[in-house]
Image (tube, rainbow, N blue to C red; front, side):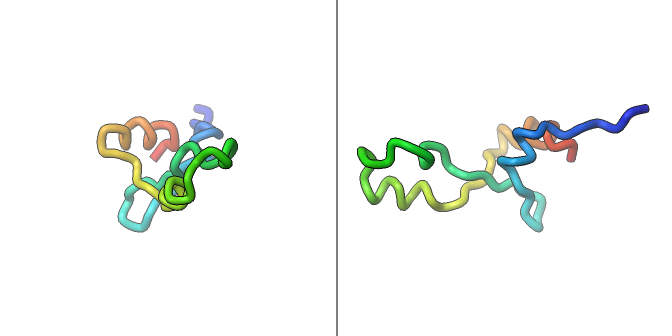
Length: 64
């Protein structure tokens, strides 16, 4: 049987924590930053966690 490949898009976007949770970055931080307030850009900088409703889907993409 061939090995199961991970989704390359998910591999670039998600990382695992030590406790098994999945870290993610916030959206809307890549371009058109001049019209966004400083507070909004600062709050988008922080790392978030994938919600419990989506963890099974992300783990399937990462083959965990």
